[in-house]
Image 1 (cartoon, rainbow over the protein chains, first blue to last red):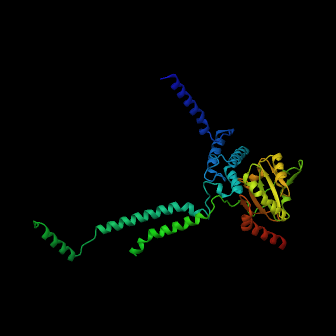
Image 2 (cartoon, each protein chain N blue to C red; image 1 turned 45 degrees about the horizontal axis):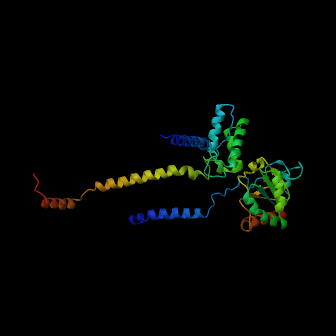
Image 3 (tube, rainbow over the protein chains, first blue to last red; image 1 turned 90 degrees about the horizontal axis):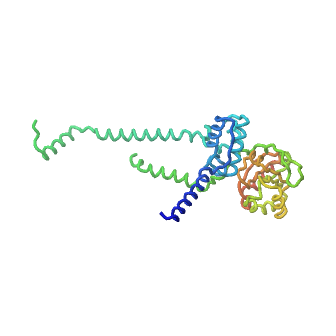
Length: 163
Length: 180
């Protein structure tokens, strides 16, 4: 291998390595936590709260300024000793139920919560009834008249039976 | 009965198409504010260009007003600025919240483009914005005479938005205020 080629290759690898951290840590603030359980709660809540600006991202993933504000707020509230419920209530009272990726069960969201179970039930009912219909279609009983006709047809079309 | 069953897929399609068609004219970005019919959140913040004088939420009550969240870094704010100036010229009370901005830049902006605001609240840290549920500038709140938030519009206020949405609400609230 020529020296030029190996230099080129080293340069390429260096470039790729330089790009790597930028991709891996798109959100760059760092937060200190007093203990691991706070950190875990921060992760869980940040993943469950939805960014109001970029609507299909949670606040942990989003780069929007408002998501950064909410992360900061979340961190501050956790350190003030607020419970998960209090923090969620704080967010909902400002940004509405919209910020919850896991909507609360109430009159408005009941359909949302029950629909999967109901649809599954409906699917099971459809499958069972269609299987039953097919099974009963297969085991249809012939009337005496039809049986005689069938026998006659079979006899003319095949060899006489032994008995 | 058997024959009716054959139309089931068509029926399902029509229902689905109905929902999807309705979806075309809905704006998924439009979020109802969580603060509708709630009083303006409490705050004490400096007034822009007033040498440290501060203002609280009581200053915003007394008459029907627009509270406009703006910043010099917000391109759409520049777009709506002339229309806000026009509304202010017609006598509408408009208060500004200068959201996460620098005072110098904000004052230069007002000097250059005109100042439609009765006063501007300096919300450099975005704390009032957070309490209001602001998620991007510009946002415009309609506040009634008692200082209660009655409507929130996200995005540019222009002649069309004013005519179709905000003006009827403001008129209604003004009637309400004179009746009581």
